[in-house]
Structure formats: C-alpha cells, structure tokens
Amino acid sequence: MPARPEGVYPDSKGRWYFKVTVGRDALSGRREQITRRGFRTAAEAGRERLDLLAKIHHGHQKPSKVTLTVDQLLDEYLDGIEADGRLSPKTCFDYRHYADYYVRPHLGQRRVRDVTPEVVEAWQRKLTKGGGIQSGKGLKANTVRLARAPLSGAFKLATAKGIVAVSPLLGTPRPQARRAIPKHWSPKQAREFLTLMEGDRTWTLWAFLMGSGLRIGELVPLRWSNVDLPGHAVRVVDFVSTLDHEIVASSGKNRDAVRTIDLDEYLEDVLTLQKKLQVN
Image (cartoon, rainbow, N blue to C red; front, side):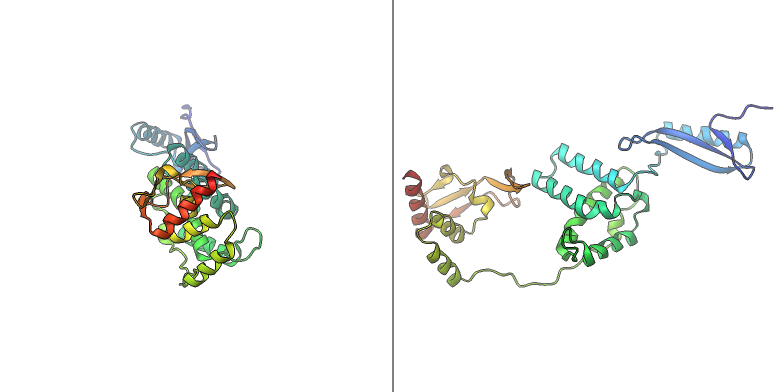
C-alpha cells in the first residue's frame, strides 16, 4: 500500500483533502493554512498540494488571511500610521478614539473578508440611531463620517496587501449632514462681549483673537519674535492642539496655515497693551 502524501487526509465522504501551512499571522500569531477539498485520490490531492506550494514559493499566489479580524486589521493600520508619521499625533489620537468607541464594539470581531457594503451600511445606520457613547442617542452624520475614517484607512491597507479585492466602504455612501447655517457673533455682540470683559487680564487675548481671526491653536503658541509692530504684521508659524487634555505641537489646520496677518491700528494697540501688561 503506497504511503499517503504529506499533508493529505481522507474526509467522511470517501474523498481526500490537503492542508498547506504558510506561516503565522503577524498580528494574531495564529497559524495560517490553506485547505483544498474534493479530490478522488490521495495521490491527486498530493500533486495539487505540491503545485500550490510551488506557486506560493514563486510568489504566484498569496497566502489567504482568512482569520484576520477587523480588530487586528485596525491594530496594524493604526500602529503603522503612528510609526511612519504620515498623520499628525492629533489625527492618530482621534483615529484611535473613533475606532475604539464606534468601530470595534460593532465590527471588531468580524472577519475582514466578511465585511461587505451591506454590513458597513447597517453599521452606519446603527450609529445614526443610537451610537452615542454615554447617552445612547443617535450620532450626527459628521460624527459617523469621522468614525468611517480609521475603518476606511484600514481597508485601504487590506486592499494594498491583497487581503480583500475592494474596500467595502467604496460601495457605501457616507451619511449626508443636514445643511445648517453657521452660527457666529455679530459685530455688535462681539463689542458687547469685549465691553463686559474690560478690566479682565484676558481682555487683550479676546480682543486680538476676534480682531485678527486667528484660531485658538494659533494664538496660544504665538511669540513676540513673530510680531513685527513697526512692520504692521504678525507671522503665524507655530500651532498647537489638544491631545487627551494636554497641549501638544501641531502642524496646523491645512497647508496655508503658515501665513502673515496684517495689523491695523486697533490690533497694534491691543498688542502694545499686552506687552505692557506682561512687563508689569
């Protein structure tokens, strides 16, 4: 009786199947295997097994990551963007926050290959109806779009690595926010606020913030070395943001964040007063 080929086994229906071990998953540590069934003889299964091993060896077929979960894929993606510095620390922190609170609880244990556009759409509806972390109330469309960001990035990675052919998010439209009229103070309201703040040590900061149009994350790191009173200009070159209740350096809101602000007489007077207050 001929010896049974390595990695070949009989099944309960009188057929034969083989298994090929292709290593261990870098994320889960689990052994990765490819299984093929339905062969009439052990010899036939053995030949197909050797053929598959040759294809894998020469790079003609990639091992299948059939057990990879969304949690594991998110870990690989988030660790990767933090390591290579593609995104700012603030963005990386936000991605982890949205992944932990809105993605993992609902999709984390699903296998990556089982996440379809229909699954993504159902997940978005669930967040919209009751995805609030503490309140349990529905999330606004913009929050759902933000929650999509780390999931979308993770599936782009999965696509690049050949784990899935197409990202399921491509077939799922993002929730559309209702058009809202921006709310802001009128000039009269701003003047009334500054009048109420007169005498307070923060008055000059509020006055400069409103008069210059700077963001708080641009005003906080502003230094006198970037203020040119004789030249009537302020150079905005440093930025900060909050990261887990701490102030950290930032690269700015966009590519045009580094810029020069022209000063009028009012803003020059405000800065002059601030300089005197700091000296005293």
